Length: 263
Image (cartoon, rainbow, N blue to C red; front, side, top):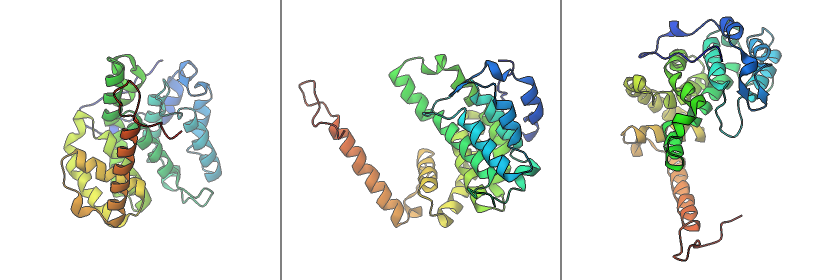
């Protein structure tokens, strides 16, 4: 690997590298992906900013698929994330009107991938890993590389919190939340909570509402007054499912379990 994720104490947009330089300077073929090595990544990544929206859509799918499988972080994940962050404000991405199926702006798709990847490497995942395998993060350098990159990614996501398109604003917020776990970014949480209030007042998306409510609770903010009827129903359903799951796996005193799991 000839390039490593940068780290900075505070997010500044100027730390983002030139996208073409990333494609040229990294030995992509030496990096492991979900499908082998990253030899094909430079070509696919370059096409994400193609003027043709159909080409952009196909390239986005092809490139991100290379580093998306079973919530894993690969050697190529951090370099791909750096490239994605670097092109978020590219004119071709900004001008995408999503007229081409699946009629979802490339910008939203890129933000969702950054969000999903950040959650796959968040503090909860690390805590679970450390509980199961002491030294989990010490040995998982691919995840460490992505986690070190969070301030750089945040610097690209942050301006999009005020985007004119609501879908983009919401996607930027959902991406910013796990990134803000980085110690250098905790000062931004108050701002993110303000955006969370806006999302909760306007969005009906269950996934997004769960993400912001969970984040606010984790950061010590009261959320009950912000919940609507569907939030309450979802919270109660999640609690029932958790209780059922816990009961299935509860030791019965004989070395077994209280019930057979439902599979």
